[in-house]
Length: 239
Image (cartoon, rainbow, N blue to C red; front, side, top):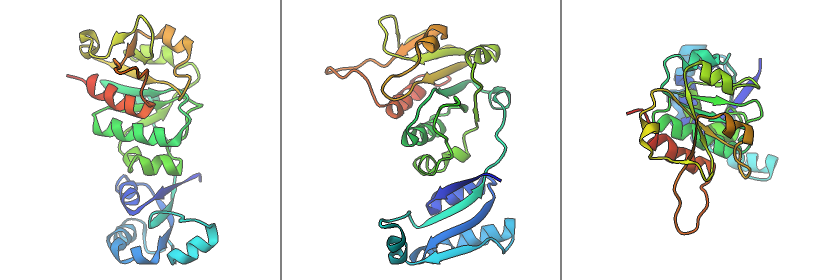
């Protein structure tokens, strides 16, 4: 019976299109008319008894002290996540998020993964939850489109068992440039992205098949992990 919150009409619509069950909605009065199609979709697929609570923007601000949300919130039921094997069976390119703790970064990476043809995203146990409200909103609902799953504690061996070469994104003297041809020619590649600040664990880098960096200019040493993910997904896409 665990829940998650979808924020904004567009994100709610993408969640509904993916079959996610709505339990209730909180809508600002000015948005009611524009969400008529959303309500009709809910009635057609889940019946007319899903409650819609309505308040004015001023009422919500008085309750919370700030602008609560972007027009609408929906409480929705979480679904059973697929296994690692299920999301990687036919995958050529996957992303692994190791202990990324900022929900905004997780959401942005999910959006880049959807846009740049990443087949699946795998999340370590200490990573921020992709279904946290802000992560869902920043992803623009792509968290409902890209297959994803949580990894077990000892996950590197599991990736190799599934036939993936692993590319750890890290700044090391022996790192391959991201445009190295052997990376693009790899049939099944897992791009591993590390936590903000500290980056990947040393043990993760040591167990990876490749250590990969994005060349930098003008004295800049690195990119934000969400920005780096977009560059990596595009450059390392299956050709």
